[in-house]
Length: 68
Length: 212
Image (cartoon, rainbow over all chains, first blue to last red; front, side, top):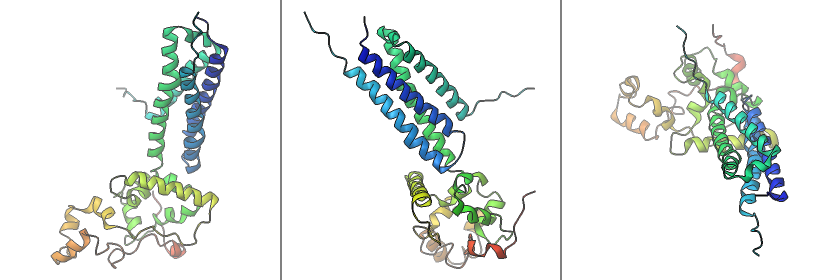
């Protein structure tokens, strides 16, 4: 089964965004401060939501191969 | 005998984050892995399930951390309130509670300033978000006041049914007094009985307790 280039690109993009979100989350656990809490919620959470959404979208948007 | 140390939630979170990042990196560098059925299942776990679990655990950890005294006092404007917990005078209610460990010292602010009602914790967090906004983007008022008069419910959360409270000479002198306290008609703080609280305007005139 050959994977489309578009699917590969989406997997890379979403994977990169999710990793960025996870790194922000890991960093936010180092300190106890209200701004860190906001960073966790809005920056880390934002990366994760966008990354996961792109991944889920890539699953449902895979085009069916044309029937002969 | 050596004691077994159970890793805390933060350590577990770090491990989960590390494992998720490694697995995602594997798929990012070799996306062809997801061409197989097993690869697709792996991708769903590491791109969706694990990040959701990690984010939920992280949110829970941050919620717990936001109850800490250190968290509240990290804003400069709260420093005098933190200092008032060390006033060397037992008539000051917050100081007496803090110094005698009647409340958990590491959650001192939260213990008395959360509403003990359904969703009280969430309401406290939403107020906290507003406080951060005011601290960094708004104008901090010169005199910080409670949104609503302090409710006896917050005192009674611990004191109700305690012998010292229920059988206290003044509290039980007249049945109507106890009823008024429990229904919040007679305020514990502003009725003149326990009215010494943070006193931030007079801190310079007071002595302070230094923990040994």
